[in-house]
Image 1 (cartoon, rainbow, N blue to C red):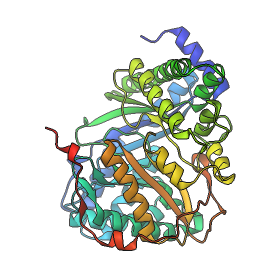
Image 2: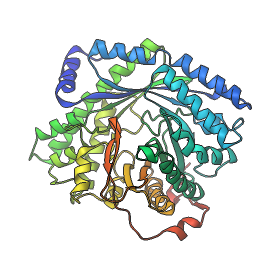
Image 3: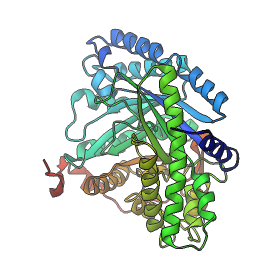
Image 4: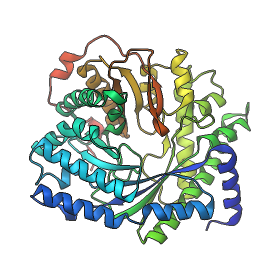
Length: 454
């Protein structure tokens, strides 16, 4: 049970240390909307989403008022579009029509984002999935709320290099289609290895086929709370540091469980998972980089950074799973550049490079996130960066991802501005050496030997 003392302590964290519920996400199954006619499909999808989610935003606002807990985003995740649209969407325009329908439904119920314009070609790619992926640039350019994701690899299946090659081209095209807004379309597009199907965080959220008809997932974020706690044990040994992070993560996760239980009860929807992911914001005091620096690093990117991040990620998860029986998603620490002023400072002073960030993704929650690169970066180089991350995830049996923005018309050292939670980002240098012949091989990189478990 959650008692009043925990609520009081949590409210102090909210007032002084930037603690918030980052998102309440309502997952909705659209499997019963499948049709072989695109107009019928869109009608069913719109009705299902608006009927199921009509009370989501009002209920979240009630909880905010009653508990004085800020809920920053109200979101929806749906069954991957590649599954529900395959029979009806026979052209790129059909897929764009479906994306517009999802956007209209999201606007009607008042949510910030809707995730699930997604394909899952980890081993092979169907004709329908190919068309969906090729529709992404246009779909993201003509919608506001829709987020897209593609799972390109897994530990069990290997890496679909044909899809990796295609995604490099699609990301470039998405950047061009939204060039007038600093290529913001790419901020709503993520590629995965080992994508979880219970992830409430955008842009990679979708409602998995193993889920109930609808479910409430809550994502909690508290970098400021963790940082404040770490500063209180400055100079102490690693055992004390670990206990401090773990105990603080426990308290933060209890907040997520409280909100999840309340939202579940009031909406009459099953409670799914709490995702305790330390997701930063552009606000000062809400930074993963600052946490690492409070541990003793002069700047994020210095020697020891990967070890510090590994400690943080592990202790956050340990504290979370003690606080709730249903911790899931991508729980741990996110390291997006654009959303973290400490990361931006580290890039600008030369302490942090893409190569160091790639090393950090071996131990973080997800991967290379919200990284701006020069707009003239070749599609093959983007595919190479994706392939590297897919390999890290595949070999290490973890979720990895890439959300990268080749900012159209920008060069290394420039800045892109997205606003809101997406913040701004310095354009980072990418190696000038080519991997085009490697990417052009096509086919599939096989699963590693340790994947053969039964």
